[in-house]
Length: 67
Image (cartoon, rainbow, N blue to C red; front, side):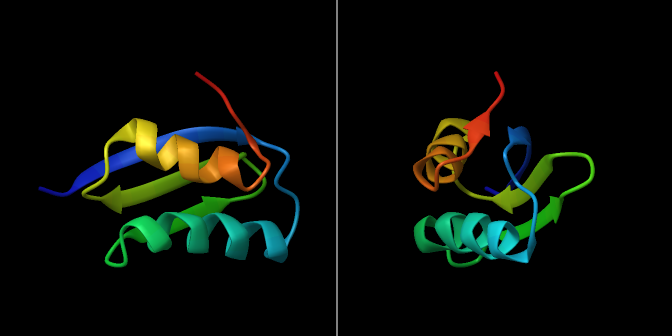
């Protein structure tokens, strides 16, 4: 079942950040649709992964995920 997960993420500032976050999520769910809004500091993923797994993927790239 696909869910929409939104995370507030600190530390993203460029296209490299967008690629890193997107790839980290898609490594765990290749079918995920990922949108990154740098200005707002938001990551939105339509995925089968639970929120904790998406947050862990983003944090694993060195970004801070707000609770």
